[in-house]
Structures are given as C-alpha cells and as structure tokens.
Length: 249
Image (cartoon, rainbow, N blue to C red; front, side, top):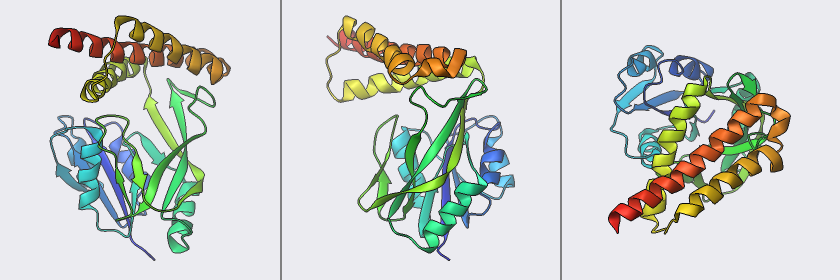
C-alpha cells in the first residue's frame, strides 16, 4: 500500500488540532508546521504523534509548500486544523491510493457557520483539491486563498471533508480583518489601482452574490450573517488597498 503523508499548518489551533489529527490517524505520517503558537498547539500535536516543525508564517502558500517539502509519503493529503476527514472519505482516499486513476483528487468540503451546516451560499458543494501524488503538485504562492496546482489528471473522491471555520461570530470578525489585510497586500503586489468606490461596489456585489445568486437566503439567519461577513471582507480588502495606495502616492 502506498504511504500517505498528511500536512497541516497551524497558528493557535489548540481547540482544533487534536480532533483534526485524530481524524487522519490512519495516515503513515502526519506533519504539523506551526507558526509559533502560544496556546499549546505544538504540544498537543506532538502528543498525538505528529511531527511538529516550527516556522515563522510568511503566507499560506509559502507555509504549505514548506510543509509539503517535509513530506515523505507517496501521496500527500493537505487539510486545515478546522477540518475533519470522515470515515467515508478515508475509505475513498485508501481506494484511490490503492488503484489510482488520477494524480490528484478533489474532495467535497461541507462547512458550517456559527453552528449551522451551510448547504448553499457558495459553500456547498465546495470541491477543493487536497489529495495528490508527491512530486505532481504544489501550492500556489498566494499569501491567502492559496490553492493546489497539479500538473496531472485530477479526479474526485466520494465522502465529505467536514469544515468548521466559524463557530462563534467573533471568529468571523477576526477572519474578516486578517484575510482582508492579506488580500489587500495581494492587490498591491499585483499593482492593482484601487479606487474608493471600488470597495463599495465589490462589497455590495459580494453580498448579492452570496445571499441571492448563491441562495444564501436558504441557509436562514446564518446565511444572512455569512453574506454580510463576505461583503465586509471584500469591502475592507479594497479599502485597505486604497488607503495603502493613497499613502504611497
């Protein structure tokens, strides 16, 4: 049976990393690259049997490519600390490695927001490429919203990857701040000229896309909260880039 390496990057994920690693206990190797957590994340991961490497965070793409470079398995599964592999997905992963018909595989991610499973809002079905042959894929170098880039055939697995990114609304607000800052840095790095009105326009469009076009209204009150959070994140991303450009000029 080919060997499987699971890679996870962390920063203050003490509340999540234990259950995450438990869900992939079937892997031959589990690697956690921790960005100097101060909440015991690294100790919990080590107690679960993972190999822990500490590295200062310099962007999601770079951090995950570093984690990938540590892997020794024939196949690599990349997951986040707030994700869990279900028994059905485990079985699909093992079947794919035993009799592969592709070099990389997408999985369907089922996410929740403030305790509610989101079946609409653009969050489901949410196919993400996570399993791949080592040497046939890498991560993009994006500071945030990185993705796996494969140079081989891509297939899809059955079974869901459970995802709990936002348990409390405070987490959503924190993500809005962190991700909008990183997104603004990406806009600036690409040389994008951003106007004041573009932030308003993009923010409004993000709300309408999530709540109306992607049927977020069918996800109840949480669907509305998510649409507002998406709008805020987009709005602040452009406004932060606009303010940075104004200071530069």
